[in-house]
Image (cartoon, helix red, strand yellow):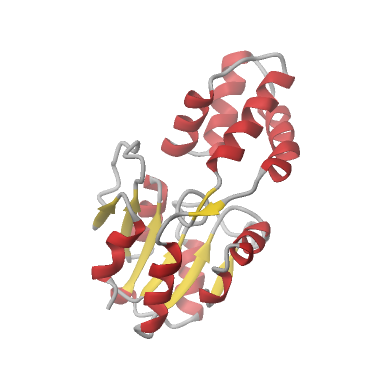
Length: 206
């Protein structure tokens, strides 16, 4: 594999601590209480969107009020660090003549975080929330990147930390590698490879 499409949150950079803290603060502001562990598990196993609706239903809130609070706090709290091995793997892909693409539901702030971590220059193209693609596991954003760059899908893979990333890859007729660093995911997506450290991808880059 040498054509890699990367998820951002929880795959390249550990954004979850600030996401959980922001969500917890938003819950508290609405008069509720929820443990950071439960919030984290909902986000990791499903999505932030799932967490909005699940928690709002539980407390009888409008989920959009919860989202508004979260979106107020999350950018202020966020100071993500790259996962160990991210630079090594991204550099190796470029060294063998491959390409790295980003496909994230986060806005273009993700590019600032990549730049701060000195990872942005490894990337050839980006899809962020500003582009009006359907959310994963819909393959539209992946298809856009693959078609735009005339990528051989036999050489392509989607790398992410959740089942929906792998499902998106499969829906785009490419492989899916699951980065389950804390082994929290109940795997339903049949990834071609499952790793707990990014450097475990190295033997598959050629």
